[in-house]
Length: 178
Length: 178
Image (cartoon, rainbow over all chains, first blue to last red; front, side):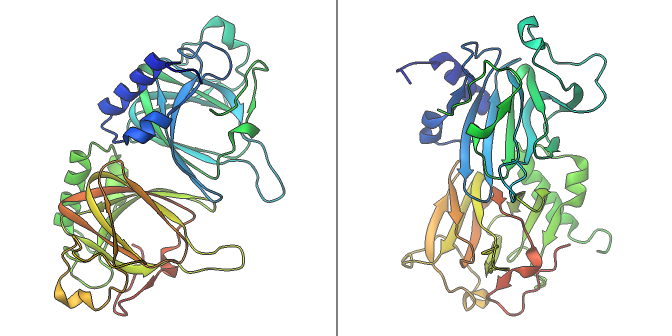
């Protein structure tokens, strides 16, 4: 990563953590990942992540979404006979998150998606998460989400995370970790 | 549970969550567990818990400790050939927690333990956790912890939780869940 890359995005994410009163260490801020999904349009498509723990049994992260920033549609596929795919719980800590999963499409969804990304969204059943609300996704289920107008901080509790196995609906996306 | 039991402890725990700016739903507050470990001395030995998620892969809880409240020494034993025992990560969100694990005994520990409970503490290597600090315990390792003078809120990320399997050093303790 070249020095200063995404510096403004990082500063905005750090400010959201402060607003949410979530304490992180300087080392964690330094290691914060800005995932731009290879699209180079991180203010619209991407998210910021602090990984607290990721071992062979469980994982915990803080996800930071800038205002209207969107994590694009993807799923966590079955990895082998024992691992049916990553299972995850999103718990909103601050702000508002619009989460979309399989099911009846919500007629007037709250997400505002730039036209160029709409073709790569297939699920549209909306779940609105405010502070203290949470939702658990089954393994291997398509989902995408966007923060509301003031951004959001979301705790993710899950089985082991292996980002490189994620399958995105938009074929241009590259999720390579840091 | 008889109505109103532990009402003051519950109110104090709810107040700590508010101080820590951790949003929980009314239903979660209602379901909050006050674990008095069967000793009937919950202000000294016990803790309050909100279980966010506990499935067959991972678990996430918020632990609330009143000022100087102590979770007594215990371990999470191996359950079978596949499960080496619960593994857990404590992340301090608010206040200060003094965690004790195996290793060189810390000469002047910060915990203040009533004399009647001291005989049931065998590990004494101190780890001090302030907001944003965390520590991951290996499975089946003895540990105990106490909050500092203003109490503490600690996020616990772990493998599946099965409280009924916990083994406590003090034989009088009964951990029966709710």
